[in-house]
Length: 253
Ligand code: PEP
Image 1 (cartoon, rainbow, N blue to C red):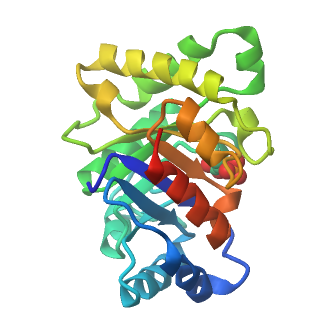
Image 2 (cartoon, rainbow, N blue to C red; image 1 turned 90 degrees about the vertical axis):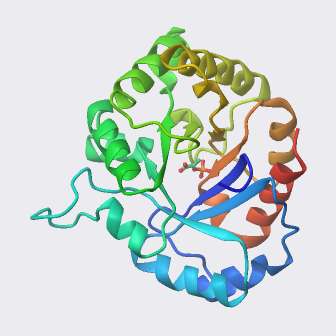
């Protein structure tokens, strides 16, 4: 995978206001860096178009799914398998986003089965973990994150760089209340220790932060938060904001 830093834009169930073609065209002015990869996760039906526009303009943008099935094929109405996602040009897939956990009841075991399905199809899963406000206030954050990681990564077929972890505190997602750089740095330290205890070297995996990242806080967060990039929701639908976040990430800590 090119570079160890990542910005991943999660469009959720939205498309950019000016359409996919204009969105991609607006990214022509990005100052690309070899050390930082930009990936966009459109809703499934828009991946092919976004990919085509991107390759017409020769922009180094990768694509991800926002979810995948834990099964490979069969009678699972409404589901999309990881290998199907790979066929339409997906290189990554977001797994365990808090909206999937809360709205669709995905627990850590389900998240784990999706991670394995993604890896088996050759996709890099982006495992989202993060505590609710209640857990944050109760001071049980490290134990909570440990549980999410240990259960979800049980049986994961680790190979070089085939997993990205995104720390996304639920209380910061879509609220305009990003976690502070200090809080993210402290939590990122816990996550890296948990990962290293699970398997030596896992603390080297790219670790991203997500939760109300914008063009106005990305530079400061990149300096303070000790992470390797961002998972971005709302701001990823606006090309100028996404460009600024990418450039902040690429120019680094
Ligand atoms: C997300 O949905 O993963 C996310 C981080 O959203 P937002 O950037 O809008 O908080």
